[in-house]
Image 1 (cartoon, rainbow, N blue to C red):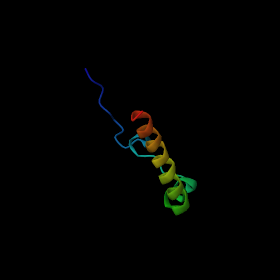
Image 2: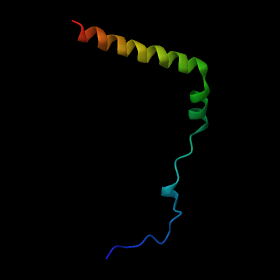
Image 3: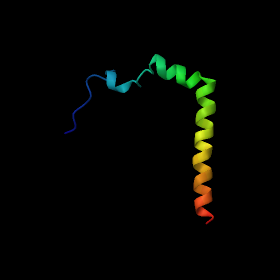
Image 4: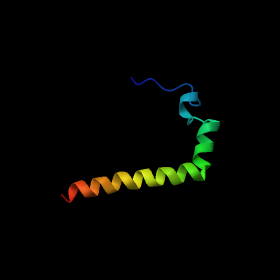
Length: 52
């Protein structure tokens, strides 16, 4: 027989709240611009490897 959940609103059911630093990094245009170029560089390397 399956055990029923007697506490449906436990902490484990809620998503974690981002820290102040995480929220800052998500809104930072400088960080987003840097990550954009890093990701593009990685994709470019992958494409260059596949065309050799």
